[in-house]
Image (cartoon, rainbow, N blue to C red):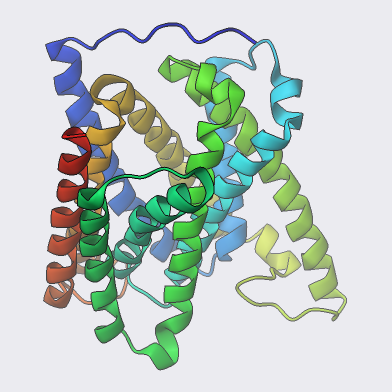
Length: 325
């Protein structure tokens, strides 16, 4: 495995393009929520749809980057499986969120990953982010907590559960990626996309095999079809396949490129700062999708605005506190 090369400082032009890419990533996340909700409305099974989309994205990235010099070692590494399972669990859980919650609500609950990441870092790795960071994380948590007064817990609590699971998976993916040797060694966008493609490809196929086994059990009557267990017909449901090919794969590929490229140019802290705007961006994208009839949801739920603003304030406080350390 090659040693990491020293990272060069991005010039003014690259920094500007990095901020633009970070903004486009925020928009892509908002589109992802609408896309998932639309696929579900067309009868797509959430888990099958996400796995198809991720596998198409992985194949697309590897078609561009190639397999590299150590594809087998990377795909068989236990740390790769941790990263891959985390990445897949994030997307599957988020898609399951949208069965009962709107895209804007789902994006807001995923911001729990911010305070959760600080807690995990403190408990497992003895990392002390400072009181300012804790204060910022508490503000973010307060913004997410506004959902408890906005949703119907009798019917939508499951959505909050899946959102919390997705937030935990974001932490798993993040910390697993941090300690993944090949990911740490990768310095260029293409290198990181290659690693991601290999990891998602092998874990995605493994998960698809499990889904196929569960579908056989559903067909045999041992399991009942649900959002967790697909029926055989779900595997060849043509809207699922079409949306995954035309939108899922393309969008996931673009998201990976935008994330890696922007982080290289403007650093992780600035990228995280732009992610604070995801709930409000999702709210605007949801309103646009509702207006053209793509999904059914509240046109513009003003009740979500205070929580979204609290998330922005909390993230900015967190970033500012780290910048002073």
